[in-house]
Length: 189
Image: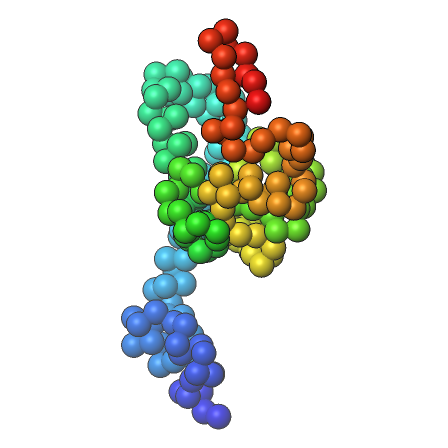
């Protein structure tokens, strides 16, 4: 193999177009290498500066948050919704039972009933990030998607009753029309 031939088909495919034009398929061009070193150096400098000036950075963040609390809450909410949309789209975008597609009603159901076990294994991360950590696990493939499905809240509760994970007193009627509410507000059946 001569030095002008590509190392492999993959190396030629993965290179940016301008690198292919300037490097004769041998690898990344020198200009791109210089840019990469410069961006890495700039990132490293910023990281070191923030590490050395942690209290100054934290004071600035506290002042910024105090001046713009609504903006911060809105940004966090939007970021959470985007994570939820991405995770739900990976799971099918609709309720597995009734076909509901309203994002406000959809929830993630653990088919094996191991949702509590999953939250416990997540530990502090689950405590601080709530459902966002589950969404990130789904997006990044840290949890098997075959063990999850989408349900609207009503179908999820019905699923739990059907699996006998939630119980309802057998003497009570399940149909609301069979209940009689007296004038005093007492419920009779």
